[in-house]
Image (cartoon, rainbow, N blue to C red; front, side, top):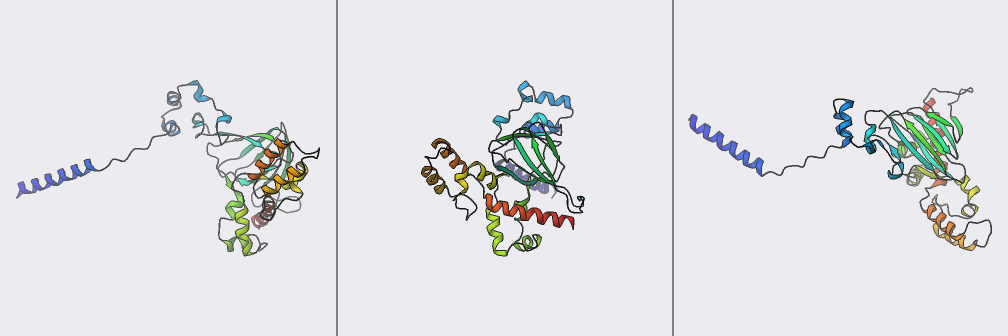
Length: 296
């Protein structure tokens, strides 16, 4: 009896072993350098994982996201720091957003940038209303956006502006306020905005909100590109590219317009322009709705 039990157990073990051997083995995912650095016992051990001098050199020019953090620049692992480089085109806006895990020290290197920041609920101005911190930042100046503060930046000039932003975190996070708000149910959106919009307009506005951070500002475009703002089709919140090309050709003889090559370049840029007219309206309603709601 005992020997039969042993034989049966041995047979079962062999069967399981053969099945395990025949089963496909999952490929172990490769451990990233950042993970290895985090798992190192000491900072001294991390140097062996960064053996080359170039491991401590970062190029914003070769990184599409233009941000140095522990993922794009592993040498930052454990430092608690990130650094971003921003090239803000003329007449462009970085959408209203927050950084959920870090404050931001924003400095302008060239050009001029206008900013607005909305602090947390309970921060009031002298009139007892929710405070909005507004600044026009020139080259060589900086401002601070505290962690979680809703803020946006605008280049109000025709020429590009450059800036850098430092963060006391390796993983700052980015949350666009408008895309986040309009991702919830329509009824909730209508109530949060004080029924300032109809239900049928929610989906239209939701579809018009740009997913990219950069947004064109129509007031600035009217100043910098008169031929863009005179007759463009804004029924969908964006310029009609066929109209842009036709208009550029029709007005080619005007001395105050750019040359043809520059017109074509500008027209191509407008293809990527977000729905700035609708967005401006949404931003105004959204800011007021959020500020009013936060103070209550």
